[in-house]
Image 1 (cartoon, rainbow, N blue to C red):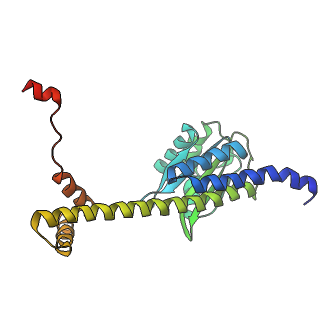
Image 2: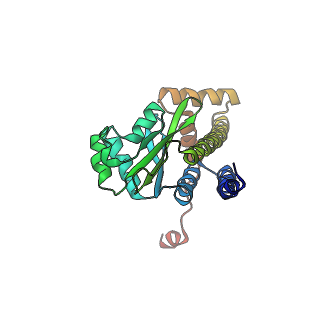
Image 3: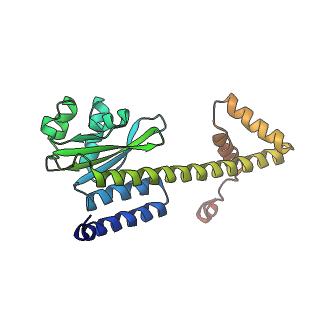
Length: 241
């Protein structure tokens, strides 16, 4: 690389470095994907962007969009069961659409896409190991807007993969800690109310959860809610009695 090329690439490299730090500092998945799509529109050859992430059932679900038109295209694909985002998600391969007008592979989706004014698209799968967990989608109003190697876009997708994986792991840890706290509180209530040992109270809670096909966490929340005293009557209610 020549000195001039180095100088031209340095600002872009710095912006990507700043993004990586920003993503690392964000508190959750929603904030992470919002930052990714905002960066895509600000720094890459895209006028709109979006991210879908796998839901609990493993299906793609919209997680962030820069414009309602992106959400419209996602929903059109999910309804029709076809489209470039779905292909990227199910096959785990980057799907480039140089010109929507010639994208006859997905005829139902194509009809919806042509009405949006968007003309070329790039859908890059996001992975956690070997598993596809989402797709980063980039859109342009120009045909053939994204190069075949999509170098910068691939870097952004890699950053998104790492950040989403970290954010999901952190959220799962917080959820697990909160569940353990709820179970501990509910077990304590059962111990006090029924004069049980800790292990016996825990067994009662889990047995009830199994018998009612309810999660132990939900049972714990019910126990805690039932143990709370009713709210005190307001001063106005007391005066009216």
